[in-house]
Image (cartoon, rainbow, N blue to C red; front, side, top):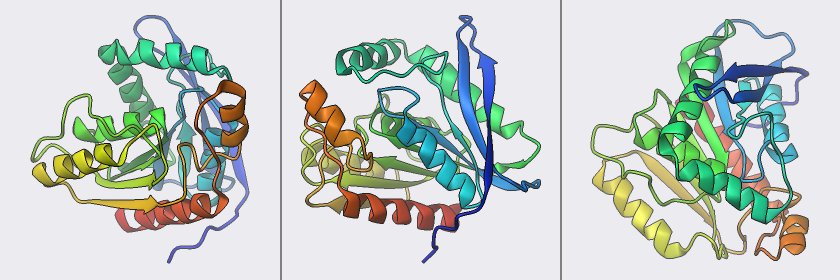
Length: 249
C-alpha cells in the first residue's frame, strides 16, 4: 500500500483564457523542490466551484509528490456556498457541452505545458460534479492514464465506447448516496464492461453524497441537501485513490 507522504509544497495561480473571454484561474500545487518528469493530477471541484476541499486535495497530492491543479471551470475562481447558485452554474455548463469540453481541454493542456510535468503521465480526479467531469473526459478518450471519481454523477454525457477510454477508472461511491443511486452505479458498471474499460468500484455502505468533504454536513444543513461527511470512508477512499495513481501513473 502506498502511504501518504507529507512534503512541503508551493502553489500559484495558473490563469488561461477561454475562447469566450472567460479567464480561468486554476490553482497549481507542486512539491517544493519540483523537478522535471512529475506525474500530474487535475482536480475537478464540486459544483460549488473552487472549494477549499478541492484546493486542499491538490495540496495533499503535491505533498505526495505530484503536480496537482485544482481546475477552475466557471471562471475567475468562482466559489459559492449557495446550492441554488451552484446548481445554476453547473447546469449552465452542462447545457453548453462544447464550452465544458473546451475548459477541460484547456486545463489538460496547461498542465501538459508545465516544464515540471511528464505529459504522458497525467490523471484526473473529481468530487461530485467534478467526478462527472473527470469521467466524461475519460469517456471522450482524453490523454489520461487514470481517473478517480469521488461521489460523482455517473451518468455519461456520451457513453464510453470500446477502444476510446485510455484511462484506468476508479469510482468511490457512498452506499447511502441519495443523489447518485445504486441503480446508476449498476448502469455505470454495465457501460464500463461494454466498453471494455479497466475499472474498479468501491462502495462505502454508510456514506452519503459528499462524504469526502469535511464541510459537506454543514453545506447540506444550510441548503437542505442530503450531504454528509464520513471521516472513515473519506480516509479509505483517499488511500484507494493514492494506490490507484501509484499503480497507473
